[in-house]
Amino acid sequence: MDLKEYIRSIPDYPKKGILFRDITTLIKNEKAFTETINQIVERSKNFKFNKIAAIESRGFVFASAVSYLLKKPFILLRKKNKLPAERYSVDFELEYGTATIEMHKDSIYKEDSVLIIDDLIATGGTADAAAKIIEMSKGKVAGFIFVINLFDLGGCDNLIKKNYKVENLINFPGH
Image (cartoon, rainbow, N blue to C red; front, side, top):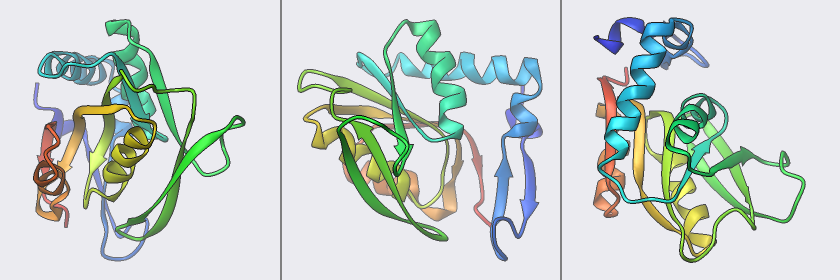
C-alpha cells in the first residue's frame, strides 16, 4: 500500500508558503491507518527501547496504538502548561514560530531507553527538543520514527548528525 496516496497536501497552511501534509486523510481510512501502525511496529524492531514517547498532538495518534501493540509504557510530550505534576520544559524554534514542550519528571529514569514517534519531521526543531527533554531526565533516546519526512527541510539529517537513529515511512518535499 502506498501510504503517500492517503496524505492530503494543503497549500499556505498554517501560513503562506507552507505546504501542510495532512494526516487526517490517512487516519480516517482504516486500512491505511492499520498499515501505518503495522509499518511503525515493524520498524521499531530496529531499535532497543523500553518506553515510547510521542509529541503532542498528532504523534499521540500513532504512538498510543504502537505502545498498546508492543505493550510498552507511553510517555506524553505535551505543549506548555498541559501537565499537572512537576515537569521538565524545553523551548524550541519551529518553522513558523516558537514553542515549548514538557514532560512529567517521573516519566523517564536513568535506565530507560525511549523511542520517540511523531507524525512528521520538517526542520527537526520539535524532534530535537523531544530528545533534549528525554536526556534531561537522564533517559536515553533509542531513536525516532516519523510517518512523514519532509526531506528537503533537513530535520532527519540534523538528527542523524547528532548520532540519533531515524526511520520514516513516507518522504515528501517540504514545499
